[in-house]
Structures are given as C-alpha cells and as structure tokens.
Length: 100
Image 1 (tube, rainbow, N blue to C red):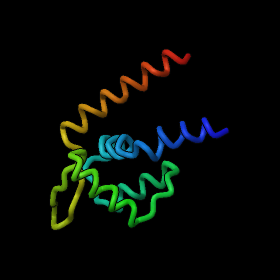
Image 2: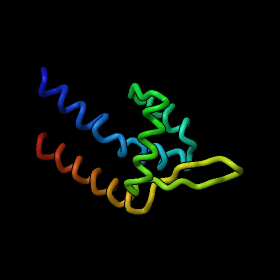
Image 3: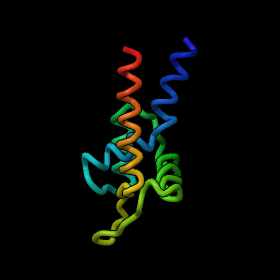
Image 4: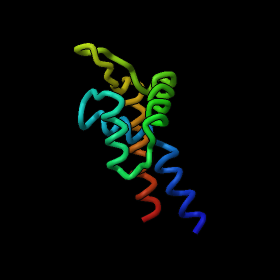
C-alpha cells in the first residue's frame, strides 16, 4: 500500500538524523564509517558516499559537530540536536498514544 510506504519513508530515511543521534547516544563519538555501518545494521541501505554527504549536511545543519581525537575525525551530536531529539521522541510517544 502506497500510504504505508510513505509512512516508512517519513519515519525512516526521511529522518535519518534521529537514528544518527540515537546511535551516538548509545555508542558515544564515532567516526563517519562507524555511523554508516550502524545505519546499515538498522536496515538502511546507505552507500558510503551518501553516508558522508549526510554527515556533512548534518554538520552544516547544526545536528552534528566534528571533533578530532588521536588524529581521527569523530562526530558528536550537538546540544541543540539532543534537545530536538528529546522533543521528537515525546512527539512520537504522543502520536502512538493518540493512535492506540
């Protein structure tokens, strides 16, 4: 059904930032390839190129911050991203309650 496919796209690939922030909350700072691998394990068919483009866009949007540790670039979620992540989770919880 097309409506269900739109729903999956919206809560999935349409909101990858939620998944990336969740991954970083669980795992701590990660390098780009580590984040891409985690997204793949969650079932997203993210190519390596698209993954790095996504991360760069998230940095430009203020979702992620790049930090350097031991000569490696790592990504962390910004405070604003954490705040919006919590808001999004509350909204999803409210949605589930309204639909149940």
